[in-house]
Image (cartoon, rainbow, N blue to C red; front, side, top):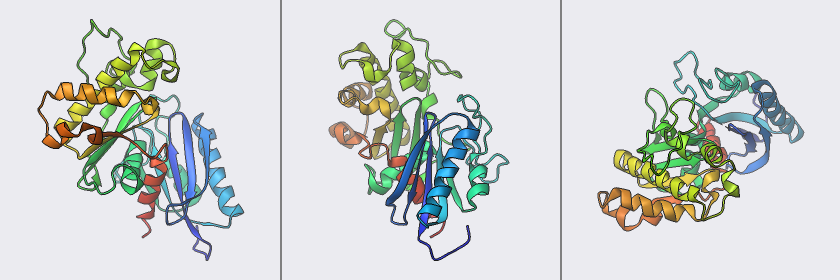
Length: 303
């Protein structure tokens, strides 16, 4: 958009497999307006988001200066790639090979910061959440799927692609858990065994409808504890932050702590063993980490 004397704002989009959260923020990262739309078809969902931004900008006389998109994936984050800004081979029906970044670049004509949804949330934890003052940490969301954003030396970690923690392979005791898993690619990987989708598939009901003493939670805690133990030994972060709908169960985190220490069996940095409750924590941002994080990354493109 052409430069004007209107107040400059950032558009932030957290594109999830269930819904698209979008917001306009000022340059101090205060939210001016926000909305959410269900994730249906790409054509319908993207058009609704674009209409919200365009209409709100016009109605409130605001100038858009940058946009941040934090998307479910897998996505292509390599700028030199022909499919940079695309959602690639996702299991989400109808969303494979969708040029989400290109769509908004054409519609809004501003610089765009593009990341995974969990990278956006991980950066949000650094801005205003559980990772302030930390340089090395991991944010994991346990919801419909499982994903993680990893920050090492104050930078989001990426290599040939972005980390896919949800597809970590897990040790199994089939005499205790005979469930085959719900991942369409691997069956019984972490996401296939411990995601919200797997809970519903395994027990026939959403986790939010299961009682605290249901055996689902003991199984869930054990898999998430293995995940945390693996991440501790491989990445050695200063903190592991857990978010997502599955973690809305207040009794789950203490169970993860207990099984985590059992799995480590005394082999970890002293700070981890002595203070596990401050090492594995829940996000304090209550669903806003992705919006805040991707807006901050977008703002860095114009500062």
